[in-house]
Image 1 (spheres, rainbow, N blue to C red):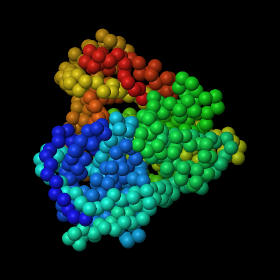
Image 2 (image 1 turned 180 degrees about the vertical axis):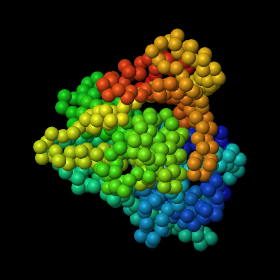
Image 3 (image 1 turned 60 degrees about the vertical axis):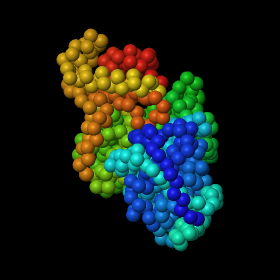
Image 4 (image 1 turned 45 degrees about the horizontal axis):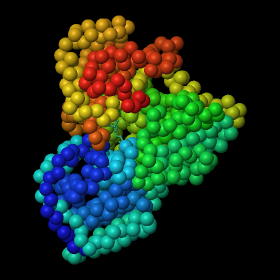
Length: 581
Ligand code: VG1
Ligand code: CO
């Protein structure tokens, strides 16, 4: 092949959001759009670092992935990359990419320096839906803001990109290495490998598969996993069925439907994972004989939703419960946790556990990139987000299958003496026991999706302005609900990274109440159209006789206050959120 220099010019709107650049497919397929972003990334990483490097390229298989992979392969060759690693058929879950970057050693002894992950995560796929791309660094974690800012700056000044001419499309369905050489003698390999084996190996080194196997074999235990047609299915059948002996029928929607996830919305929550929700005995048309344990993943398999029989576990509780039980239940943590962390809008359930176990604790802005520095510095073992993201320092992404294995480990540990009697401690028992010990953080999130961007900005500006007079705010609150506590402080969340000292401003508007309740407002950074307003509502209940209420009932007064305070309906014209989680 020979290197072609292609003239280009900046295209607006290529600013990476919470987790990379996500846009409609139609935006990505404009001439030069993907190429500009990829070249801007190479330039941000610098030509010296890219020359001779080994990079991973793969994703959740959504529409446009296959074309994008061929384009990136050709651009990598032209920029002097030595090797490209591709999961078979271009498929790798986001956590598997992170594991591959950190763990995989190829037959020739090479290791990778970073990765392009092609996914728009939980957003639908298909020609009229979303595509996305993000770059992960050599620690296996998302590029930090310093790098994504540089990428964005480069997209605003780009004049040309490099792409190989005469390099044929590589058959990514066949495992094996294809070798090419450039006209200047440059060597370039494309290595297509099994998408699951590195990840499966890592999971086996973290968890006690034997004890999970015993739990699964217990006739009183039953299990259901829904991959929502996303990439998680490939890992689920390898791990849950082949390794752990679960029945094939435990898997729901686990044959990855590449390109469009079967037309569905691959977002594991009570709204979009309808089939699993019904199977677990919840929702409008509940099954009559639900399994003991259920879980779902998003398109790229980094998210998880955990359910018990007729019981929903909020993600904020899930990370707190995993942290509280990790040392006893999971061999990887047997020597103790280095610390724990959560994103700002995530409930304080984890804080209470950290305090009682005397663990280091960190509160970071939304998005996984902020956890990586803490983990690299040995400050954090377990972390999570309210948005169905849970993970640990085994990789630098959240990890949907890991979370399910963590829950299975806790169930296996709590039931190790019950398997023969069959009287099992359930998911619901574990959560309720946790509330009895630590108190309960009632929690809900309201999403107003695809509202007018200007209106969303105005609403946020209004909320910031209100913060200048708390006495006004408290007067307003008392006018709406006299049973809601006063606001004690209010601010816009700002984070100073304790490791590198970098500061991230404007990370969400907070109202903190005297009784520990919180209201948080943020604009989503992952949407591809209009704006999405997220409203997070939380209230702490220590009294164990009051921890069993329905969370929407318990939170109703705070919700009312939040909607009035923000003038939600006035600004957005919406009288209800699109999604409640
Ligand atoms: C959302 C979630 C955030 C998560 C991010 C990426 O971001 O709120 O917690 O890290 O998605 O998740 P935002 O900016 O839309 O609120 V995923 O599964 O897309 O990689
Ligand atoms: Co995801």
